[in-house]
Amino acid sequence: MKPGNLLKVAGISALLCAGCTSVASHGATSVASHGAGTVPQARSQPPKPSAWHVVATLAKNSDETFSAVVATGEASGWAFKFGTGVTSAYERTSATTWQQAPFPSMKMLNITDAKATSSSNAWAIGSAPFQWLVLRLADGKWSVVKTFDSPIYGESVLAPSNVWVFGGDGTYHYDGHAWLRVSSSFAAGGYALSANDAWTYADTTVTHLMGGSAKTFTLATLLRLEASTGVPKLSEVFALSDTDVYAIGDGDTPFQGGPIAIYHYDGSTWKKVAAYNFGDPGRLSPDGAGGFWLTVTQFPSAPSMLLHYSGGRLTPVALPGISDPGFFLFGGMSRVPGTTHLLVIGNTTAQSDAVNSYGIILQLS
Image (cartoon, rainbow, N blue to C red; front, side, top):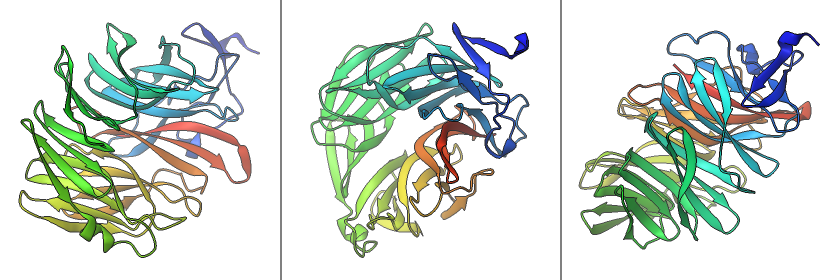
């Protein structure tokens, strides 16, 4: 082995996988690690504007994948890898570098979502046996700041002293000093607009939490129109303002999911504004231009895909070179603050070689 093939990352010796190629040959380098796991390596050339690129991969045969990602700037952010019962954190230190960083050591801790408004205001949520955690990045180090004994399903981060979490025990708001339970009703997720204004969803209802009051809308009648054999439900909510709110409906057809419907609230009524055939809708991310991105899993017949909603139209978006039915988007997405650029994570398994599964990160920039 040539000395130049040895890569030192955060105290871990890793060997460059000279025989491995990245997805669709986009220049991302696979890195195989010795002992402590695998380290993602970013592509060596900057991506072209306004196009999708693979920016990081985990080594093939690793059976490890990214569980969450958050962008804090154009070439900065964090990715979280879950494998062998342990989570590892990787900081993006440049357009071409991801470096393993210290992270709380807790067995079976899995980071499920991360949000940030800047490099100095990043948060994450995760689960561990019998507890659910909120973590915060401060002075370059991640630490647990709140523990819940019921599931946490989502979060909204608006400022260091303005953070919302949504879960089985209700909706909580952090004001920089204390956590206040704003609602005791179950919330499968939500989206906040300010310190006293948030939208949540659960089953077939959307609830507006505003200034200590709650108003619940039932979308069951609309949802039933989309279902033929499944039990329809909501899967996400997104608000640009209190008179410009979107909810994602899933007809929940057995074995294939969907059909998917987009509902819009204009301040007085809810109506269907777009639809897509089948697939399980996953995570949603704003696009920074008044629309949003939505991940869709079409297991087992087709690879995962992205839907983009803008200007009243829902458009399927092909990802670069990702055509194998073994490719899955696990839902983690993050918009680069202040831009229309996006990071999204996935996992790929070739049908011809099922053991070669590995995590990837894609970037739109």
